[in-house]
Structures are given as structure tokens and as C-alpha cells.
Length: 374
Image 1 (cartoon, rainbow, N blue to C red):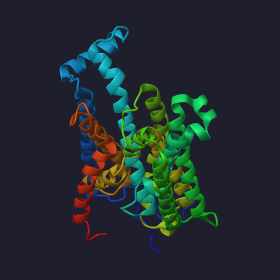
Image 2 (cartoon, rainbow, N blue to C red):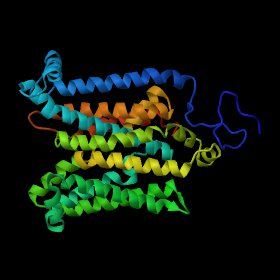
Image 3 (tube, rainbow, N blue to C red):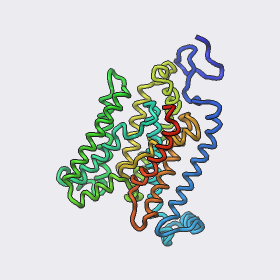
Image 4 (spheres, one colour):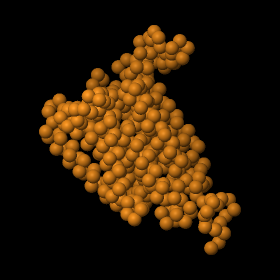
């Protein structure tokens, strides 16, 4: 075997002559040159989406008034808030925070699943967390008072969120357990198990919808279609505290995901702990997606579209794809929510409906452009 290039470092314990890809660029050259401008672009898009979301709405706050409200809050606090400050900090800021967490979690989880499964069509729903959370919410809305009266009395307004989060993690744990054979996680089995449990969860939701009252059915449909309307500071901060550590953990897997693109056997030869990477990735992705889904409901296509757009702009290196997907996912969700609550004001369009309307044509366009490579 020929010796590796001098520019590629060896990791401790690697076989002689095998370079390490841990932390290395996946595609030096063009991808590296595009990485900086691409991440800058996504950062600017996220910032523009945040400013627009804070400004626009039934009560419009112009940019000078927005800056004045923020400056006044920093200098004098909110002991006697103005009308602008009440709208900004009590209504829109927690909604923007929740939207940013939702988009970042879905975008990173989508990039993570596509990297782990080496499948450009993978998204977070394949590990069962979204459908599990949806079923947990549906079960709580329709049968919760009868089945879990003690839980409702103990958790109060947090009952629905806790049930959805727990059900999403439970389904993900079942999928991961089914996929584990001889101490190794088989990704093909995980994919098939996720599809089967997704179908089972949707069947359960259909059954619960058929026996729900009109009031329960309206609540169920609104939750299943996705919305940031439940954003308040307390739950939004709880979600942020759960999502941020999971995302930081996933970002540390960028080098390993680059190596996995070569195949599991090659990644093992390069010293990558493949099973550990898969377990950490699935658990972290499930925690992030389960947390946001438990409050926002089902928001589709962000985890599928955002990573593809990032790869087109910045190349396939996961050190660009993962943070880029977080930034672009946050920008897309915040922008979609702004449109959902302003286009048909005073009515509010469900967020999941809007992301599907926008995401489907965009994804089909990407698929058309890359159909010969798939």
C-alpha cells in the first residue's frame, strides 16, 4: 500500500498508511472556496428573516421603532414597556426563538440522517420521531383525560408537550432497537422499521381522528399541520435548552460523517467509531426533533430541502452542511411563519401547510436538476 500524502494526518491507533478524515475537508478546492461565502449568505438570510419576523404583522413595527424598542429595553428594562416593546418581547420574540430552534433542529437532523443513511431522500421522519410525537399528541388530545387524569393534573399545560416528546423518543428507541443486530445498527433495517412504525402511527392517528369530538378534531388538525402559535417564553426557552446541546453534539460529528460517505467499511479502516457515531447521531437528532415537534406539531420538508440547498451552495463537506442547514432551516421556518400569520391576517395559515407548498416545488426542482446523479 502506498504511503499517504504528507498533508493528511494520522489519528492515533489507525492502521499504517491510512489517513484520517476526522475533521478533514470532504472536497478540498471548489467546496472549500465556496464554504465561507455560503455560510455568510445563510447567516444573512437568517438575520433578515429574524428582523422581518419581529417587524411584520397585524401590528407593524418599522425598523427604527424596532431598534428604539430594543435599545430602550437594554437601557431601561421593561418595567414600563411601550406598546412596541410589549408586542416585540411578549409575542414575537419567543415565536422567533421557537421558529429558529425548529428550523435549526429539522435542518441539522435532515443533514444528519442523509449523512448516516447516505441517502439524499432521508429526513428526520425516517427515525420515527415525528410520527411518534404526532401520535402521542393525538392520544393526549383525544383520550388523555380518560387515560391519564393524574398526568394532566400534575403537568397542567405541559401535558401535551410532555406526551408528544415522550412518544417521539419511544418510537425512535423502538426503531433503533429493531435495527440493532449483533451489536451493530443496520441502517437498512432502521429505514424499514421507521417506515413501518410511521405507517402504524399514522393509522393510530386516523383512528383517533375518527372517534374525536369536533373540538378535539380541530385541536388535533391544527397541531398536526404545525404552528408556532403556542410560543411563550417558558416553553420556548425549554425547547432551546434541549435543542442547543443536541445540535452542538451533532456538529462535532462532521468529520465522521465525511468519512461515512465513503462507506462504513472504509470509515472503520480510517479509525471512525461507526456504531458510536450512528448511536449519537440518532439520539441527538431524535432529542432535537422530538423537542421542537412536541410544541410546534409536524413541520415538513425543512429537513429534506435545507441540506440540499446548502450542498448546492457550499459543497458536500459536513463541516459546511451541518451549520449551513441549521442557519437555512431557521431562516426558512421563520420566514414561512411570518408569511403564515401575515398573508391571511387576521387568520393564520398552518405552518406545515405553507412549508409543504413551498418545499414540494422546490424539492421537485432540485430532483429534476439532479435526477441523473441519483
